[in-house]
Image 1 (cartoon, rainbow, N blue to C red):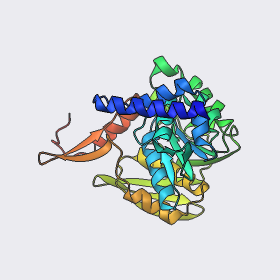
Image 2: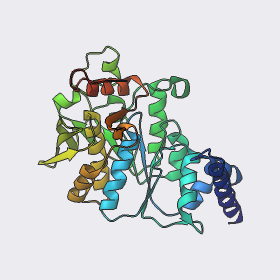
Image 3: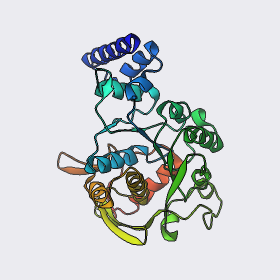
Image 4: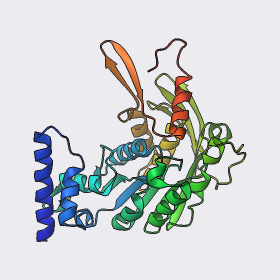
Length: 322
């Protein structure tokens, strides 16, 4: 319709002007376009099924993993690779990838902010939603975790299948909200390295009450810049050599593999895609700078900071840390 065409044209123009001025603008086209057509996301998405990845930590990496697996399975995927995960960022990506108001894709896989997912869920109506974990983050925006869980629960009501972390009690507590549920988790010694919110703040924890996982992280052992991971699913062990450091990335990989399986990608190509993936920007990324190897670790909340400290503890004595 005419309004959508004008919105897309205005958004693209705003994006070009922003780039010419050297201001980037990964969300500006969507912001401008949605002011003109508030239902632009729904119109551009059309009949292309959506997949949503949300939660406190791991959204960007899990999304990148899942996209790589789906593409390895022969599917054409639209995604938001910059991590711009509010409505304006998703609208921007749809504007950039649409042609004559249509997407040439089999699936749209979006990382979505855990507060914004409440309003975006009913708009995207995901075929599948991955929920990674819930931890305290940006309390000025999210409030307490019960509020964040309620946002995600509301979005799951419009979702076909939920891929949930059975080791996180608040995430596992969302079971039954979507059309159906599948679970990922870790073996006992792996769970000990991935504390939930209660154990982060003093509770001794103990056995996790969540359902038995459909895909379990049996072990995750550091190996160079990455790790050697063993996963168990359907009575079969799968060994992976990941370029991603940290046991939390073993969980992200398990979540992505389970989601890819639910979306029709066989295990072998999905596992190969996981092994080929390099870290997303700043998330364990290794760069060479003037002859030095530098690893970047993004931290933004206590749970993520604790995991970064675990990685630092693996460094050789005397390694410079900034």
